[in-house]
Amino acid sequence: MTRLTARGFTIAAALAAFGAMGGMALAEPGQPAPWEFTLQQSASPVMDNIVWFHNFLLYIITAIVLFVLALLIIVMVRFNAKANPTPSRTTHHTLLEVVWTVVPVLILVAIAVPSFRLLFMQLETPKADLTIKATGKQWFWSYAYPDHGKFEFDSLLDSGKQPRLLGVDNEMVVPVNKVVRVQTTGADVIHSFAVPSFGIKIDAIPGRLNETWFKATREGTYHGQCSELCGRDHAFMPIAVRVVSDQEFAVWVEEAKKKFAVAPANAYAAKAEVTKAEVTKAEVTKAEATKAE
Image (cartoon, rainbow, N blue to C red; front, top):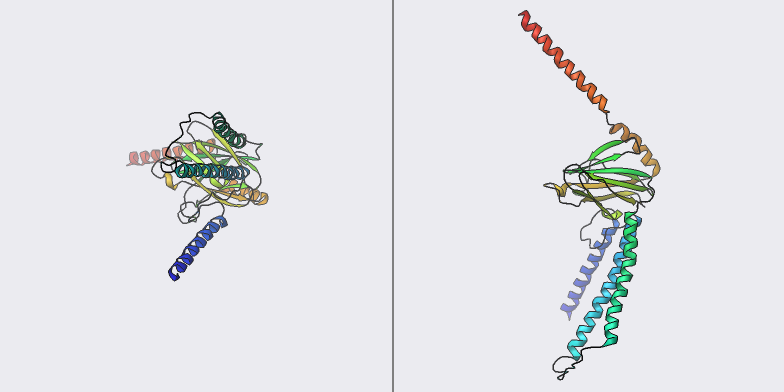
């Protein structure tokens, strides 16, 4: 009895710890957590609907599994050879055939309606408050802000930051409660831009511009990863999106314009001409010195 009681306490403690770890997973939104067995905490309307649809399907699937299990148990108990030595030879039952045809159709319709509603919600981009172009490269992301000065910067893995293998040197920054249109493309091979807390995942294909959207409902930093095998360092291509207030975003934009200012093409051409002139002058001076000798 004592051994059974001790074992019961051990099991209860293990279950409590397991539940606590699940709670810890929810305490840190926007990133995976050890022992996490649920979807990441939602931070966008699309992800809210994905979570609802997931739970809705879970109830339906559970009911179907329990129903089929009950039928199997009934058949094994009531219609085994010992309990039913003379089996029925019935081959048709109109009512049953109608029921097992109509009920699955109704279940599929009940699943299809919210499913298509969710698909349309994901595909139809609302009027955007800002646009960000995300370009996948081996093995980092580049972000361009065409609506805010057309600056662009690279975002690479920073191994010194937490969470492990998800921290980056330059985060994508967006304002809270604003519709963000994300346009994706690839510079070399196919990549995929995915942030679980926002419920978005879209391929970044070279030569093609794809589009998705999200509306972050809470401030914080949300992490994702490239979700398309893209070569050697595919596993080291994180995505980090920092959601801030409108005021903080405005300040960040002004700082980013200076930090990530892109020199115009003619500036590069002018620099090249200066370098060429300096080289030519040096060659002439050297030739004159050689001639004088």
